Length: 374
Image (cartoon, rainbow, N blue to C red; front, side, top):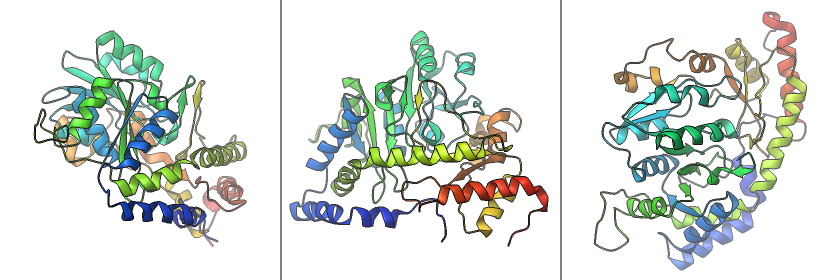
């Protein structure tokens, strides 16, 4: 049996009757935009993640863009961020006319190296934008200290980290705002695009409520130049059903991660490290090794999926060459792009799948270059 990176079909079958009933309820109500499911989901996710406010938007990318805009980021401002992540962070900064200022990552956690941030602050710096990559929060204690010292907004991309904690505080309890993505393969995934902003600041919540609705409060009066970015009622209904299972799914991911680490540690594979005080939710279990591409092919031949998140650092992408970075400027991020490999960890993995993948990796490591694909 093929071991997949995600199994959305199995997830649907396990909750089919509840999801179908939720969808039917929306269709019968004919309330499709900013209806009761959106409002309830905003309250439920905010409460689960220690935030006062949740504001649903059309995607995780929009959540970042609107959060930065609500914090006053605009033309010519600088935003300190990571080059090792999905493009949405850099894209959002650039689309606001601001400039991404990249800081290298910590190779043990793959997150922004908080110790390097303060040295990159200039009079034009407006915000710090860390990413809680693979399901582990960045060092928000240190980053909050730097942000407070310099009067900067701290907006975290938590797209992969719903439910994660740092020092006992969940993602929604830190910074100016935290953004979530409900892309279908996320830990909590919709049946299309969707996102949310979590914040403890009423002014930011009010601003994003306006920005997501064309800069309006729902009337024909426009206080801001806004967007059309609303989480729709169908997605919210699906997410509310799935949210009931999120803790169980997270625990399954954590069990899988424990098995991977216990089997692979000491094998020459760099396994991910959970920093003290963090609760990791394991959107991905990502190892690191020089022979990454060979291992990927080795697993593929055995019908074991794996994935590279991410193969190219953002500071070297053609679209962002305008910012003047060169190869070698951010060596840890560039090395990670050459060496990372994510393994199947989703909660619907068949019994024994994690052990089988681990055993295959150990076989690859033991035999080295002499291993042949079947």
